[in-house]
Image (cartoon, rainbow, N blue to C red; front, side):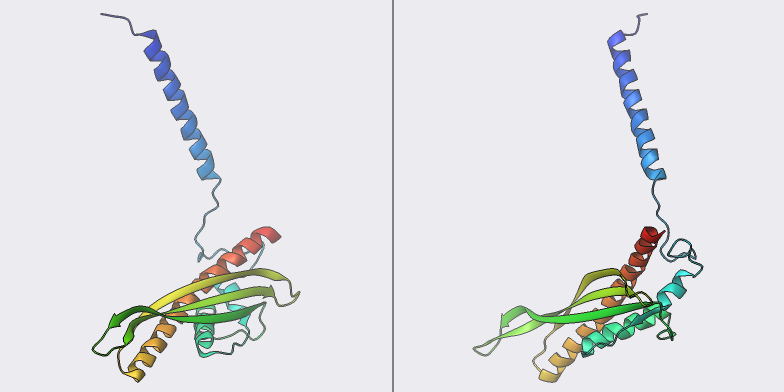
Length: 194
């Protein structure tokens, strides 16, 4: 029988201490997290008596000028209001600007001497500013983009219709992204105000 090596036991003790310290540090970090479900029944702002769905439904969206911007606005009104439409007296005002970029994604050689684009991409970019309707103070602002691809058939109308369908898909997806971004902005604003 032999005695344990004193150097190995000291190293083992040091490793155990470091592991224990690391575990305690990780536990402290995890306990400091304030993660909660975004769509829970708890109010978005501390001290608020309004549910998150009611607070999001109290956002009025200013009119826009283009067809694709109107698609984004309509989808956002539907999403924020839960299908009920715009609020009669909004607590917040959303200024929405949407731009579009249409690009040819692929060019191939066809039977003629000219190259024709056979695929395209629509990118919708929304810049938004959320303000308090009573005070006019800016709560948040941001920019979000969504791309949608489409085929460009040889027929002109079919190509135009494919581009419109891509715009509609991008508008729906952009409205969903904006919905989430605005909800997060209201939570952050509530934390600053609280």
